[in-house]
Image (tube, rainbow, N blue to C red; front, side, top):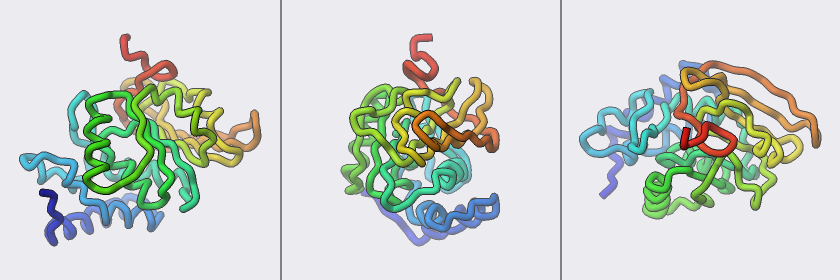
Length: 219
């Protein structure tokens, strides 16, 4: 049975202070990090890692993202409560839960079937209701487009045009772009039908974005 103790809540406060000290200013993001029991995503043997500011393996070659990275990407999205958001890479479901703390309209797609099934089961247990999909996230979810915001939680070799085309005018795409070693966080705003502005931010290291417009899974 999942349990959230005073000890865990205290550890989350410490994590929020650390992330704030690193420069995160969006209070809604900080509140989400301080509210969500990250230890729910960890096996009992690894609970001491839950509130450390680091990524941690979740199987299938994937990780639960570092809390600072989650906060950083979410802050760049400039979320509104009415935003319709597409998340590429459900993974553990932690980043998705952070998004849901700010807007209820979250569509999330996962490439790996094992992780997808685990995340769906977790969302059901926690009574969370994102729109979940199994498939090639590098192609987005055109059937539900356009989106106010798109968040990619894996490193891409280039910015997929398929995702740019699924943004609303004024919409924001946040995506790490680079090689297998390091990626630069990018924020793209759709100014008009064929006009986009691009900003570059800090370097990060993500697992690779797999799929047709990412790193091909068979290569």
